Image (cartoon, rainbow, N blue to C red; front, side, top):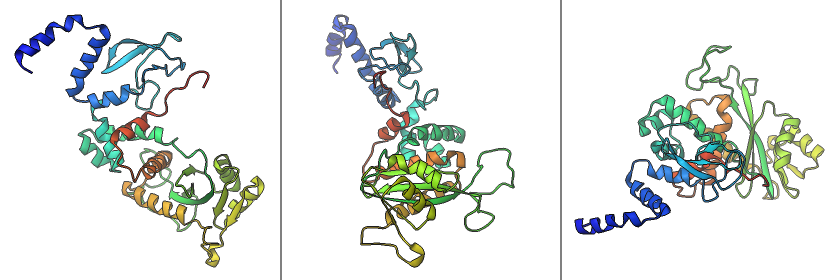
Length: 323
């Protein structure tokens, strides 16, 4: 802008309303590092300015702290910002979060993610599990049509713990005995033909645990397709769930061209191949990694911007009292 035009524009600044002044300040901040992240975070509050504690809308601005707008709730009297009540609350270096979201999108290991963001590995580790916390609850609420279900197993891991009841394993390790054992953690995977995915970490693959996990997500007209596992058969019979079992040991993998579990078994293969890069996942964090993979699978064919991963990491918006 020419100097004369700038002086003319500056002379009109006194005539701006408070709202216009705020818009000018926000526009001037566009070139600052980390502003893109702040825009994403502040967008969570929106025009309703709903309090994350009591759910009431209409909060008022109360200054700025730690680079984020603070709001005061007239109903409960408490203040909050865009991250209050989210898994990301209290974390620093917000200007790097889109870079870190890209690392999640690319499925980078902890070491590579730390290098990409130029942070310490402990920071990258803390961010990973805060970001994934919101994704661990992101599951299909209901499976429709033909749903396939099968369990897969992961080696029990105490990775990251200081005191072990056994000698430590290196880079994931292997079970002491081949086949199923107490060292294996069962994970139930269920998918319908539309790609909706549900999973659950179990302690045993019993009919009780299978039923507790599956019953809430199967629609009234859903047909469950599984292998010939007695636990699945007993669970479906007791719950009155339409069920088609395949006799895999006899070589029956497909019935009538539509009944099979190839969809869910292919998902098992992709999941295990992807988790293998991390050289063992701690059992206490397994649910978070399952959520990471679910979100990736759901959007694998889309060119998602890292903003979508950051928004997902913040979790759902607060609901009103009447919601």
